[in-house]
Figure (cartoon, helix red, strand yellow):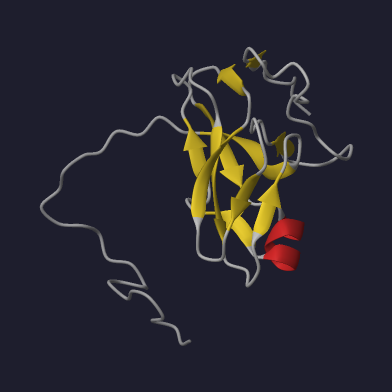
Length: 150
């Protein structure tokens, strides 16, 4: 196994009571994020809101933090991240936030300190796009959505 990558994290003022992102088990790939709302936020069915997480990050180049739904909230309550996965770029220094949407049938309350999403770190390769007049053939070709069946 390789050495852990250092990511700097800063609690933002007024969020001293909010836990830092936490791996909930030894082999968890994601770090749970906690709501840093000042007061309870209610998400009505079909409604979306930006929920602050109370911290900012400094990551090395070629690393991103992906913000993903918590499976339990998605299954049991219909609560998910609207832009999933959301991306936190290595050069972003603002507060991390989570865009939550309620796909459920009932209103859902988000309280200060509730676990709302998870954050997974991924490497991003350096990519150089090169314009071409033609592309090499492949077995799939231009087959798009559902080209192999439903």
